[in-house]
Length: 465
Ligand code: ADP
Ligand code: MG
Image (cartoon, rainbow, N blue to C red; front, side):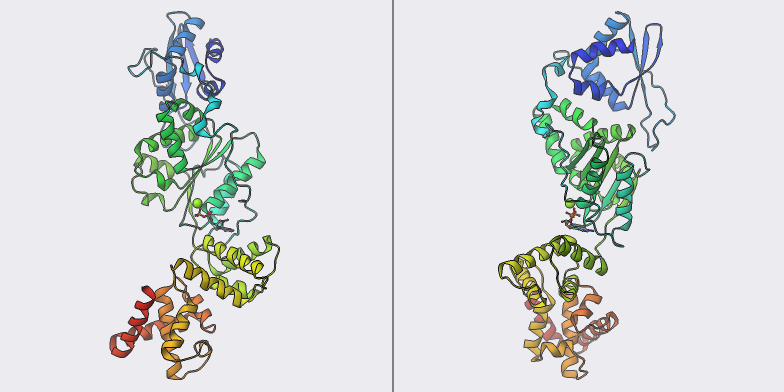
């Protein structure tokens, strides 16, 4: 009977709608003239009722007769992770016309061609993956080991591991987009028939808004419900967007329940996502949450080496070390400096040496006026205290040298993001306990020595201006 229904339904609507909304239906039983069909979620049921009630009625007329009845059984939509959990059959009243049906346009689909979803950019079912982001060129370190391993597991067995959804979070420029794109690329190469989609949350939101504006919510839903692996970047942008969240919630449930893989990123852990509905947040926690941290020194070295290698050039280790010690905020910044350095080198036809690296860094910082570097601090200290750079980095224990050196380290700690280890490196390779001691000494002197405190404050003010 259901096959007969399907035959007629298939002729009446687009292939896309058919696939999305009718293929997942399982005929459960037929008792007399009552057909029970099993649908994947409450939302799915509501969507059928809202959009296809007339078509279903017609197909029943055709397959059973005017007195044919339809009942839905909904696969339970709870927090259970496994598919095929115990199902409670929900008995729905026989087909009726719900008040929200659109009697004036029962077969809206017939006239619409889903492959004209301009707003969805889906003409070619493009995955929006950048092939340059791969696991191969994602450098592994302590800062990203768990996230990378989880990503790799998911990429190898999408929808199968318990890492569904996989949520990757971390600050800006730490590699979230790179990692999730690597997952997407890996999956696509492995299973070309799977539909992988990468979308930013902003784009998802604007597609949704356009779908409402253009009355094409149907196409929007069809499009998203057929995705095998959905990668959605920067979900923090969904915060405060209630309608978009609600729709995402339904898509999420549908995909999750049908064993499709969902991968998300966020700039903060789920519990800190304000303005995101609790029911959505609780979904995010079903799978695995893994964070990306600021890369440690060794990872920064490895990342620089990888980029250098990719460019097919060679740079002295001391330069790489200098860069790794000078930029320890995030990978994007590190890459930015590398790019300018390479550009500088090729423009001026110079070797990339320490001098050029320092000059480039100074230049960049001046350009953005955003941060103070060790070199600018050293410059100011040598001027103020009339000492030489070599003294600050040297071994002298003379008080006239030790004090300026300690003040310089203190200022570096105050004014830059550098770690104690990196500060020690810039001051003659001292270890981090020496740096701590210097900072403490200056702190104490600022409380007890008027002259020193006013000098230090003057310098601080000058840099902060
Ligand atoms: P996010 O999305 O977290 O803001 P991105 O993924 O855009 O960060 O990363 C910024 C840049 O740093 C990208 O060019 C990316 O390739 C690079 N990057 C980040 N982490 C790594 C890593 N572990 N290995 C190699 N490159 C990385
Ligand atoms: Mg990103």
